[in-house]
Amino acid sequence: TVSGLKKGRKSYGGYRPAEGRPRTGPMRLLPGFLGPDRQRLLLAEVRAIVAAAPLYSPVMPRSGSPYSVRMTNCGPLGWLSDRSGYRYAPIHPLTGQPWPALPALVLALWREATGVPYAPEACLINYYGPDAKLGLHRDEDEEACDAPILSLSLGDTALFRIGGPLRKSPTRSLRLASGDAVVLEGPSRQWFHGVDRLLPGTSRLLAEAGRFNLRSEEHTSELQSRFGISYAVFCLKK
Image (cartoon, rainbow, N blue to C red; front, side, top):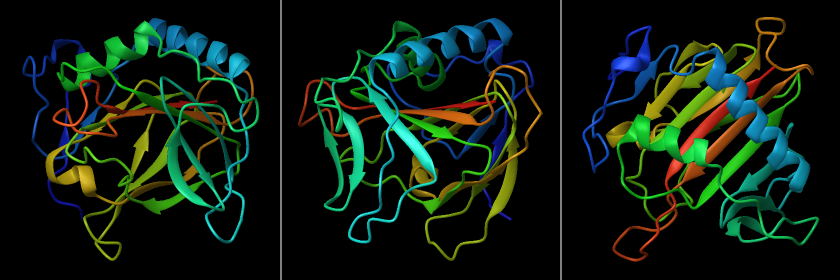
């Protein structure tokens, strides 16, 4: 099993992180972080972002093999994957337009859950169809690798796999239901993680089948940039 996993209270509303700095503990599972109203509000923000910056199909570096997820971004920078590699860029790869601004709600959720004072610079949005998945990986393209990762789930339950600092580390599977949150911080910031599959029909939040995943992150350290890219993941499933 994976050590260092803490489970929060079912009602998340009483949690308040230390003001002005990120927590440095292990991975935290926060069931019910978003209530029904905030789930619907966040979904509306995602719909608006996707309308302005359409989902596209990324491919793996070198091989060109397509991901099973589709992506878009919001914020000053967006995370991209293509034959030339992984990188951050200020414009949409298909439209050539800047990414939409980060919604105020995304910023509020990030600060509420992590307690860090700076605003995210990038928010990646992944869309998972009913059969999509994401293999084990670490988020290590950011210079500020000590920034926490926040994951919020909306819609169908996902089987989220979490490992350790090495690809061969033991793993465990967690069910992330609509409104749940996961925070990777401290040592767990470098843990391998992925999505095994979705459990269709476990939520009615989205009209279509599948799952969205929003990720905001810190790309550069505060010492190098006045505005870091904080990392938050928001998962929207059917």
